[in-house]
Image 1 (cartoon, one colour):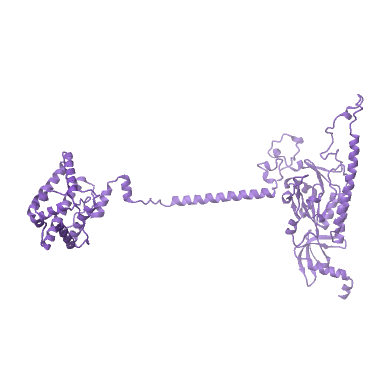
Image 2 (cartoon, one colour):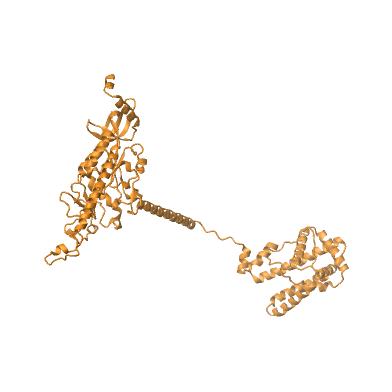
Length: 598
């Protein structure tokens, strides 16, 4: 134990202690495989007692090493255009030394890609540039992950906020062990950790470019020192190189301007070739990058060939070999019509905004479908249940439709009888009911006056026969006071005297009106009961005859009845009686008192 500790210096011992405390599970680290080679892996287990850790490398192996063999891993975020490739219209060219650069960074760093280009146009470039390394990328971000940063020179400028990465991987990466490589430092939210090589824009002019080799040297210093100090030194050197290049370009531009300045003294001679005096035009062999033909050692990749010909997939492409798109078999790649194709539009990758919009549309369709299904279920439930009729008053219905059942209902509620439906039989029953009512009234009047010791005839003289023959005129239903008096008398008599029940057939009861004249007539009837009984027969017979000869004497009988009603209305004087319904003696006493006052 002491022998092992003697070979470890105090500095290494303190550094080893700090590193051991800093490592966590699921943290990205660099594990030393040999004395000169490291591998990238993730910590899966830590044994603090034995001071050892288990790391799963990106190759799929699990190794258990002492914590002194672990180093924190650096995250390297790469840009595409201007760093690894030079993009043109429909094509791109790889920067020199790209294969060596990728081999170095994937062996020593955790690599990711963040480009400001669109996803659908950047995916083919990533597939071609990284090849087998594509699966080793930690993540790929595109323009939708950038923040807008417009300026006067570039209104569509963007910025890459590295805090998004720090929040996503808090255990492994932060501003100390993260490096972003971009051709423009203005796009970086943390310019102090940015490594910006010379932009790769013109492949022909930059055939001997060594920007990636210089970047590799800076990254080696970062790994050796385990610090970001080399990035600051590299940024200073880059500023010096950019200033020097701008001055050279300025001098070259002035010389070219003087050479191209037209002479106002000399004129072109006829011997002068036309190609010299001709205006500048498109030159054959000029590439899309502004210079002449691309060197043969630089591969120009056409993006058109990465897309399948949509017409060829449908079997109707007529361009043949001149078609700029691929005629390979359908392997699921996007077609030439991009996302506007109805059949293959789903193959194109969608941006974050497009995915959110599609999710909102999907939720809206789901909500509408659920609402429709709920309404359908409610409709089916309503159809399955029996329909309940609308509740309404029977009287209101009869009154609204003008039905004749209103009178029958009123009669049923009042006396307990109703019509049978046969007019002749109803008329006969009506006559019997009226006759029974008269008999009941006469009997009640006789019993009452016999008990009290006085008669209406002694108070008021007159001919009882004449009064008996004069039937009281029928009153309309609106005379509630008169009807109430007669109905009260009928109820009182029916309770005090046991009478034979009426037949269960009746119409609306025609209640007679009780007035002073009627009372005089009743008193005369009590004095001469024999005369009254004899006089009833002509009355009933006359009623029957009138019912039979109603069609011949309708007009005459109506006029007589109208005269009788008018005379009765002028002579009647209604009497208001108070008292309980069953107390007949109290009612009679009140009537006698009222007749004495009159």
